[in-house]
Length: 193
Image (cartoon, rainbow, N blue to C red):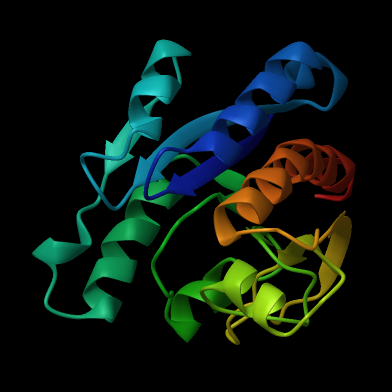
């Protein structure tokens, strides 16, 4: 069985989309895969309740308890490794990971970013796209590398930027696409792991 471990920091809407897709698509039978755990760096992350409601084990590794990024990443890796992951999925996990952590899961870690990478890595993607006068934005699923939001692109979805768009309106339309794109990308990747 291929174990998927999902990391979250907040509401976990992408995590929820993945869990629903795994259940509806019966990934245990069709892909020999399961969401084995949801881990958060915040005890108040709303997505933890969703995971528990769906009988998915959860764990919290609070980054504030650790004096360095390296110490946090070591404890996070220990929590992840207990689940023997085939795939590590970042779903709104708002921590920059150290190069050593990224190397540990090289080729087995993916992320989703709310822009059409390589455009607008980092934060405030919607504001930046609108300010630059872009006609399209979107979402990108990519492999995670040590360079933030620069890993190989697995798939993308484009969303038009409308003349009267606000950051919030654009973000909502892109998030709808993320919820479709991320589970499909994971399902497509699993057979190769």
